[in-house]
Length: 118
Image 1 (tube, rainbow, N blue to C red):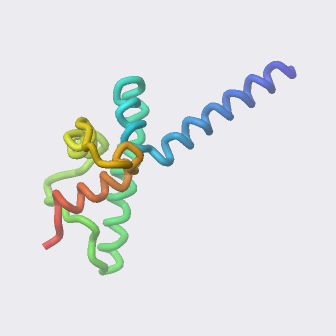
Image 2 (image 1 turned 120 degrees about the vertical axis):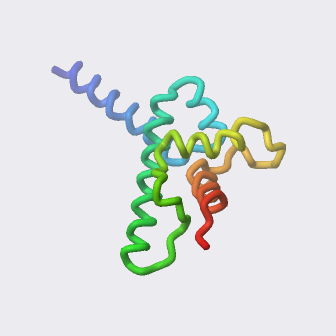
């Protein structure tokens, strides 16, 4: 019984460690996940896309300006978001600190740049 408790504790701890890695996903970690655990990256990027879409929806619902304005016939999902940021993440920007930049921030800035509200 103790063995199961220890194994369960280790499993839970490793899950939290992975979740913590993803909570502050850097460009460097994004590149690693793209190669080693693409399914984990897909889940993360889908979560970002959902969070940003919900934020925009809530702003619109409250009659406030949206953060970005996607054409009505386009839905931004995790794969779309990856396709938008991959060109910037794929190359070394040779900017000090670029590898530690937040993917979440980069993704949001990209959405604002690509889909500005007029």
